[in-house]
Length: 595
Image 1: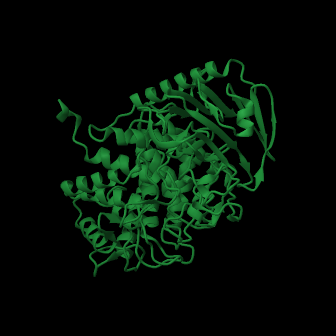
Image 2: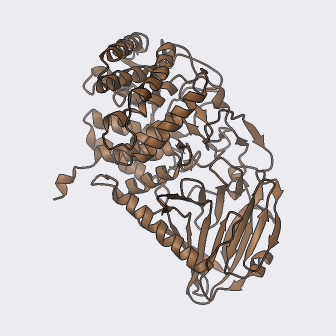
Image 3: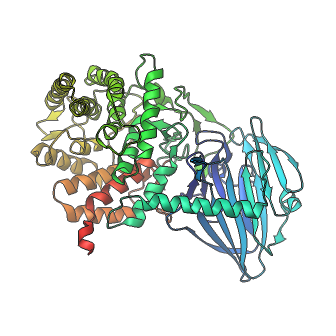
């Protein structure tokens, strides 16, 4: 049965998910939101003639071990047979600096070497196209196989037996073999030399990248893996950051809450760049900011959408795929996301909140200037205009609209940050203008979203219910840490949304019924709120528990089942990895205590 004990490899251009036996179960090529050429993750129970698979099978297999190479996105899988034989698989997506720029080919590199006994393996490589609907046509040469799809061609270049791969016949593995799957281009050197060079350069790249992170004293391994995962979720060519690598992993069993997350939500992306900024990895933020600016410049006065394609285009019509049965057979499988057509007023705040670092951090390659500020002001005007208007909210409710408190607070944050940026740029007139707008919105929220009976802010103007996003009121700067209204809001959220060691985003019935799983990021928000209130012991205990819920590779999905801790929802979820980083940096003992 499929589960989310998967590893992620990638190179900021494409990614692959690999299961515990080394099967590539999900890969979209040539980019994150493309057609999945390997899609067994969403094929339910395997049939007799599967497609969309890439397996290195060890005959008489009995068990497997798997790990990342330390501080890299390179995966090692060791398979053992019943006779004492063993093979090691090494999987990676090449990425390194070459000729002064990033080299990140759409290539999956695999090597297989014998490590014990006389192992026999079989290579089963069957790319699929059109979401599993179409098989590919095949042609081959002395050392390559071409897989021809409707829109593009994949080429496998290998020093293994072409006949054995084409016929899927087992063979004795007497030496290391290498398999480079990528564009329909000739490999100039020997396959072994090329793979070795790509491996060494990729390993050096990731270790150098990690070396420059400012990690906390405690939980370093967890933070490093989370940071690499966030880095892999950034589509470097455009600057977009995807919410997750998958589509249609249900939020709960048979819930119908199956969504396509392979796109760039402005809100999620802001939280990603903010987390990476805390670790000193600012390049992702710079690229993402200009992705936003390009979107705003091309919008021609239309409201910002909550989500865009990774190339910045706006159309994301949602359809259902009939050729894939879904994760564990739990369809539907959706492509696209109708949330692009929703009104979510917090997006203006999310867009502007990504920008302050380029104005305040003098290390930036492209520091913010008055020209960039003027572009951001247009987004601020929109935020001020819609702060008290109904929307679908950050949880993207499909059937109702309200004036959501979180959306209003994000509109306030947009105006507040513009005032601070104007002060930095020595623009007193604009500083005063945006400070007045921010103060006016702040007063409206305090009047409309405060519930005297509950002694807390509530999820919508004039409402009664709680929403976990209110835990961010201090984080966003809307309330001070010692404001009794913040403590009252946290207490009300605890009473309504906490279930054991997890926090739900809300508990009231929505378009699909009552939520069954806890939204992972919300528990991390709660942990941070506890630390803000001085309840550090509780916060650390809950954080350690959340770390225990990660899969064996240190990754998290969108949701967790409260009773079992099982991962549900799209994977790996950037929101969740952000929460881990933020809590670790907040709760860790200072470095000074180590010496």
